[in-house]
Length: 376
Image 1 (cartoon, rainbow, N blue to C red):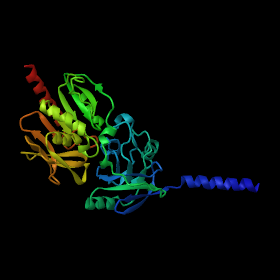
Image 2 (image 1 turned 30 degrees about the vertical axis):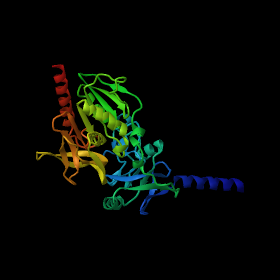
Image 3 (image 1 turned 90 degrees about the vertical axis):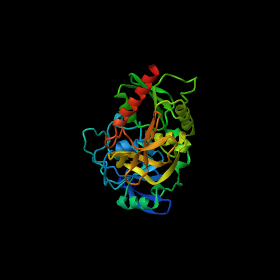
């Protein structure tokens, strides 16, 4: 009887222990530490700590491949309140952030499209989540000292620091095969460097056939050649200089005067292919409210952005198309004579404003005009 009672007590204590919140901490490479409570996968992880100021759109942000290798801090104080929508509404087939930091996690979502809680999603996909109370202090620290490496430690299980910018992340996230979607009077090659799904969606709804290719697939080689009208280079993670094979393919495209547009990382890759240069921003642009001014106009667009690198040296023959109103960094390039253009921000948004969606129409107009010239 006594043994049975002891077993029951032990079992009860074990169950209570399971239900208790797991302690966790965010530790930065300079030694700064933020205590918290784990609500995701109970495993320690390391990466680059960044912050995003968007009030909504965490499912889209978390599935954006541009966040690969990064621990994402959401500055808006309430996260998880509307749950997680079905996978068709994500920007990739799975979560791409390495870890998530929030201030106030809501475990009781309320939304017609919600299929599960944010915590359940993180646990299913093996991604740690940490609730800390002072995300404002963390964000101010990063703004003052710059983006830095960090690690989420669960129950003091230590792991080494990891710098995602020290390797070719594009090769990790790019598709491994050529894929076709849609039908229409125009064919666009989408170089997948970690493309958000809404780039393809934005093209498909404009009567375009999209051929998505891997980052290193040389579709200009005679052995791989197929008919197409223009090239769009997608967003993606990490240092653009690691995507050397994409840069070489773009150099061939520029030499052949093929209409080409770059978005986000694609903007940086186009600049590098044309002879420009890039640099790492102090703490990057990750938000849904970045103001970009169009050159030679007084028009300012509110844009969605997610990048840690920027174009510093504008290549010969190009002019600045857009400029960031906050820090003066380059936000777009346009060739003075040839059909080459690019933007640092996301015209496809998701999440965020759709102010710049017209850029897809502009690019396709350029493509179709060039196609018409060849057919004349």
